Amino acid sequence: MARSEVLKSVFTKDLPLGPISSTDPTQAQLGRIFKAYFDTHNFPYGQLQLNPTMIVGRKGAGKTDALLSHMIYNTPKGGQYSPIIFFQDRDAAVSINLVVKQVSDAIQASYPGPMVEQVADFWKGLFQISIVTAIASGYSDDTPELELMRLYVRQYDIVDADTGEPFRVILKVIQVLRQLYDKSDSKKIGLGFFESLSEIDPGPVGLKEACFAATAWLRRNSRQSLILFDSVESLSLDDPNHHLAISGLLKAIGSFNSAESYMSFRCCIPSEIYFYLTDLSSNTIKDFNRVMILQWSASELLRIAAKRCMKFLELWYPDDYRRF
Image (cartoon, rainbow, N blue to C red; front, side, top):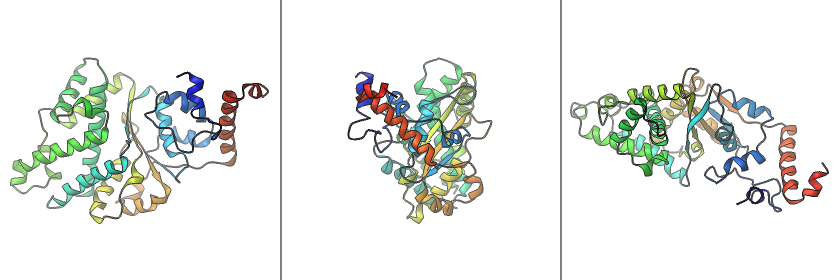
C-alpha cells in the first residue's frame, strides 16, 4: 500500500485528527503512522527521556503512545533499544491475570510463605528470561554469549512459536519450574518453592550466567533491552490471594532502570487504579521511585492537534495545505 493510502486510513474524513485509541503496535508500517501523529516537542516527551519505570495517567491520556515512542524513536544514550519486548497481546487481560494466578498458586503452595522480596526476585527473573529469550531467538551471530543464551532457552523447551509471545514464555517457565520443584529434594525436605529456586534450574546453565551473557552481548553491541508492559490496568485487584503476587510485581518493576543496567522497563498505570496499587506496595517510596505523571498543557494539546490537522490537509486537500 502506498504511503499516502496508509496514512489516509488513519487520518480519515470522519476522524481528521486520527484515531482516538493508540496505534496497534503490530500494525504494518507502524513507524510511518506513528511519526505522522506523534509530536516530540513537549514536556511529557522530555520526561520520557529521564528513564521512568512507570507512566501514570488517566485513560486516554496517551500512555500507550508514550510506550510506543520507545519503539519508534529508538535512541537511548549511547546506543539503541534492542531487543524490545512488548507485553501486550489481544488477550492481555486474560494473559496477565493468568500469570498472576500462577505466581499466586506458587505462593499459596509454599510453606512457610515467601517474603515479598523473594516474590519480586521471581518476577524479575521471569522478565530477565523474556529478555534472554528475545536475544537468543532474534539475532543470528554465533558469539559465545548468544550460544550460552540459546542453550539456556532450550532448557525450558521454549520453541520458536513462543518467542514472539512474552506472556507465553513466562507461563512456560513457571510451569517448568513448578514441575521441577514438585520432583525435587527441596520439596521433600520441606523447603518452599521460592526458597528452592536457586536449586532447580532445568539444565547446566543458570539464570545468573544467562543474564551475564545477555549483559555482555548488549554492552558489546551498544544496545539496551527494553520491556514495555501495557497490561497493569487489566490486573484483578479484588482477590486477596493475589495481593502478594502483585506487591512482588511492583517491587520487581521498581528495581529496574538503575544507571548501570542494560535492561530497562516501562509500564503504564491508569491513574484510576494508582492508589490501589500504592496500597498493595510493600515500600511505596522504593517501588514508585521512578514514576512519571503524564499531564498535558493546553498549548501542547493544540500543537498536537495542529500537527495532525496539517497532515489531514496534506493528504486530502493538498491545494489548501500548500497555502499554509
